[in-house]
Each structure stands twice: as C-alpha cells, then as structure tokens.
Image (cartoon, rainbow, N blue to C red):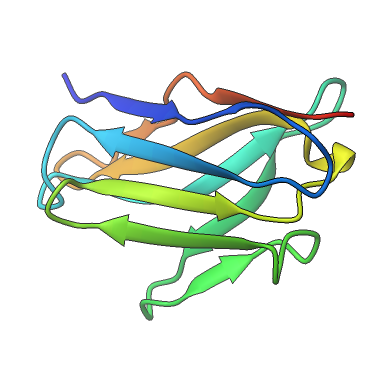
Length: 117
C-alpha cells in the first residue's frame, strides 16, 4: 500500500516562512508526487503548485513569487517553501500523487498551516 505523508505545517506570524514536505513510501518509478493543494475552512480545495508535463511548475496566482516547489527524487520527496506568508494562506495543505502502475490518486492526510499574529 502506497502512502503519501505531508508534514511541516504549523503556526507562523504574517510575513514568516514554512517549508512543507511530502514523502512517498515508494520510489519515483512507482509514485509521482505531482504537487500541492490547499483547503481553507468553508472553501473548496484549490491548486497551490503542480508540476507540468514539460517539467515546469505552475503556481496559483495568489502564491506566485512567494512559494517554491522543489523535489528530491532520491527520497521521492517534494517540498513547498512558503515565504511571506499571509493570513489568507491559512489552510490544510495536501500533496497530490499518482500511482504510475494503476493511476490511483493519493492525497495524504494534509498538514495544517495557520498564519496569525
């Protein structure tokens, strides 16, 4: 059973930074971690950052220039560096992965980010 685990969330003041991690229990040849989504209370889940088929990364306009996604293929771990955090970034952050063998989606349990003074 493949697992995808997000971590690194927490409470931070406006203007602060956090780095989220998403680790898969299988290698990159089995699980492709595609990117990050978030869901704030009372709102729909929205895209934060996602890899494109061309190898680039698309970011939501609200986070562009502040958030950066990177990956360590040897660990099959994807990171989301979040700078200049604002209260509107408060949400449960999920990483999204695809099983390359059977095309199943994996979301993980999410990690809470709270931006508040």
